[in-house]
Length: 139
Image 1 (cartoon, rainbow, N blue to C red):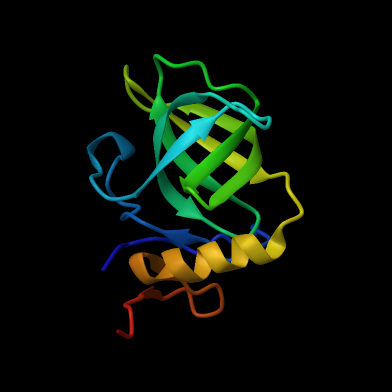
Image 2 (image 1 turned 90 degrees about the vertical axis):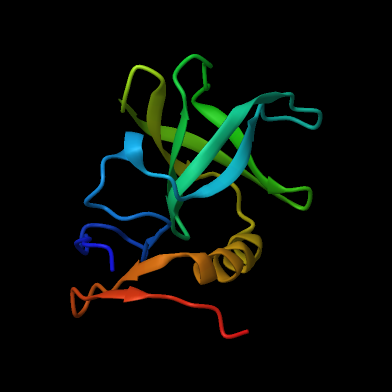
């Protein structure tokens, strides 16, 4: 069970794809995504790994060697593309950068569908109880 702490300052419940007590540069879990330029024919910037996600945004690891602009599109699959803004950057190692992003689009239903799908692969932190709960799929 991951040792994570609830963050009461956050507006939305956050779903984690890795444990909080392990440094980002050594973590092996996450959701692979593509980061693209905004626009109709946005070219791919790089691939990244989502470490946590909420209805309001996400935290992800991206290669430090690729310049990620402040506005981008996160592509989870061919049907799910969400426009976002980078609001936080932190170098994690000499090769990785942690990006905190906030969703810019108004497609709340699309984000809810994505969260429902991804939550089956995540750890959830209960804000009320401060207790970690592993979420498993009911398949």
